[in-house]
Length: 140
Image (tube, rainbow, N blue to C red; front, side):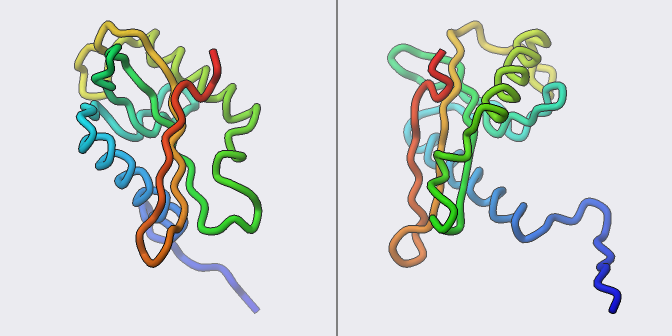
């Protein structure tokens, strides 16, 4: 039995669409807290940086927010998916971003201290997802 499925170019899988929804939720919540979202899904070398934003602080800082989501806790917490390999990929991506000094739209990166935060999203009670933000997730 042939189980191949033709997927149109550019089509997103249901898993990717759930990840996109988690990123939108986090971006919306950050904006509601006074953050300024500068870009989303930025390709920096081989890395994709989910959200780049300015945290108004104090102190004000430029933040790369890595968004991790899980449909359930069957295989652990979303926080646990930020493993050594993903941390290394994030570090390389942030280095590339800083090296470029610009966002994809051509605007210059703000000259602020930089940090990497982790945002996790998982199902909550009813249909409302739960989101948690961890500051300085790389511990550098």
